[in-house]
Image (cartoon, rainbow, N blue to C red; front, side, top):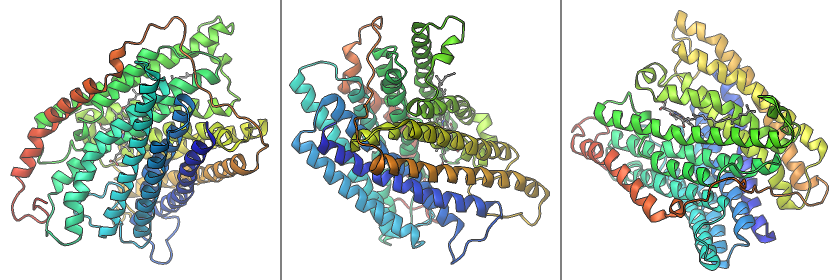
Amino acid sequence: VDRSDAKLSMAHLYVAFGAVLLGGIAGLLQTLVRSGTIVLPAGIGYYQLLTAHGILLALVFTTYFIIGFFYAGLSRTLGKFYDQPYRMAWLGFVIMTFGTVLTTVMILLNEGTVLYTFYAPLKASPLFYIGLTFFIIGTWLAGGAMCHQYYICKKVSKKKLSPLFAFMAVSTMVLWFVATIGVAASVLFQFIPWSLGWVDGINILLSRTLFWYFGHPLVYFWLLPAYVCWYVIIPEIIGGKIFSDALARLSFVLFLLFSIPVGFHHQLLESGISPFWKFLQVVLTFMVIVPSLMTAFSLFATFEISGRRKGASSLFGWFKKLPWKDARFFAPMVGMLIFIPAGAGGIINASNQMNQIVHNTLWVTGHFHLTVASSVALTFFGIAYWLIPHLTGRVLTGRMHQLANLQTILWAVGMFFMSGAMHTVGLLGAPRRTAYTTYQDNPDALGWIPYEVTMALGGSILFIAIILLIVILTDLAFFAPKGKEDFPIGTVADQAEKTPVILENWRLWLTVVTILILVAYTVPVVHMIEHAPPGSPGYKFW
Ligand code: HAS
């Protein structure tokens, strides 16, 4: 990666891992409060910590990491950034960071205690929403910079297909553009005027719908960069080949098409949306499972083929040929393994009848700690172990491989206790997003406490893992021996079929996604606007 592009990428990674540390502290405290282990000093509230934890980890860490990783990967596969996109990228960084600081300060001042979903009628200071607006504008500039770079390079090279990494990064950012339209509309036209007192009500159902129009593709915005690593980088690390370029691209196209018109699966218990539209979006949710199954198939194929090339002959002999001691492989691999039960949990959530049992319970919190906080986070850590030394001109030594593997094990063990207890106690009815309470010593609620203590135990192990992570990454950025760490990019297997050019036809895919969104959302949204009950608190449009 070019040196100036490396600086750009590193700036994002510093903010990302700074957010991990702060968000991790908030997470540890909140799990101790929830189990009744400690009482917070100085008037700090449980929900304030929960908001900080959610925003710093689910939004700030992920977004900065993804953008930093993509800049580095684009520089590696397309070449040094041209001047204009480069300047746009830095401007995006400044605007995003201004928004992040503003929103975080509001949360710390207890002026933005509205959780990461900022559901109305919870109301924050206008500055909280203005900070979020700057954050989103900054990400649009980042996405714009990547698309611009991609466009110029494609024009210069005159090739119909771009490198797989670049295609995947651009598809992820296109997904982000389409998804953020919903949240931007809600923040600009509903929350800011309402929090400034310009209007005295807000259409709650519409605001939640616009949030989930964004909120579900948001989870694939987190997942797809992990898939970039699994598809493009892992094959090179294990000494194998990418199973199929066409299959990988098709799975990204399917994510673009099906991840947006499915937000209602977060609102299955929300009144005011007709069962027909919920049904339609549940069907589309089952469509968005397909590209993950394709990914699982492709990964197993890559592992098996490479293992057999190395001499494995028995049915599962290839398993032993994988480089288990290599931290660049081990962390993402543990993430992949965790994604098997995590994905199964998602399918349970998406099934209408089962959703009635798990919705708003700690089960859902358990689900997203396995998906985003394990499969995705571990993959991002695995990337950071080679990306940071690559960008700072240092090397990942054997000792650091061992420490990084210990970090992965600690993370998996902590998450086993925390997420396992969350899933179980969720099925026993424990609600999510609740501070410590025994509900006046209700026997059911008293029965939840041992699980909450187990969650706190898992949370404490995870916190130790975060400290270890920060130690490793600080070493890799500033103290590790100087040298050249590789940026692994896989090559496609010789027997893979030729990639059809149609897979990179953006006009076509954007038209299809627009149609799907219009079909899934137009009628219910019009209904929400027309039938907002007059006079109910908070039910005034805009
Ligand atoms: Fe989810 C709620 C449905 C995936 C994140 N989800 C959430 C929330 C978050 C979240 C944050 O339908 C809570 C939001 C809130 O605050 O309220 N989710 C799904 C479905 C999937 C899914 C169907 N979720 C994710 C991912 C996330 C994420 C990914 C983050 C990154 N989710 C739901 C629903 C709700 C929900 C409902 C609402 C619940 C409610 O009522 O509130 C699917 O995409 C999952 C498909 C995945 C698979 C797994 C494929 C496995 C692979 C690994 C292969 C492993 C290999 C290794 C090859 C089918 C690819 C083998 C190697 C060897 C050596 C053996």
